[in-house]
Image (cartoon, rainbow, N blue to C red):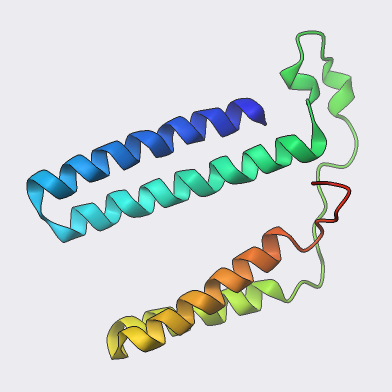
Length: 130
């Protein structure tokens, strides 16, 4: 996952540079917001990939001597009863309503959304994985 983290970190850096230049030269908020969101999404994927690399180490496809048969077995852990997606949906709905009714409600929605995403990402994280 180290390679993926570096690729997405480079992509995030590109979006950040283009975002700053675009914001300064165009002074157009819609494009600036779109580039900011692209930067944040690439940064999130880079962070996730780097954290996963730290937790699991090198994968067989990361090693020159890795074999295909080493990747057999269960692919991932899928939580059957997680409540975090409900909080994410609630946060997204409150955030969308906040864009209509006021900044105070949008900030509450953003907080709920961030708490839900953080809970979903770290729900199975333990101290020995970090």
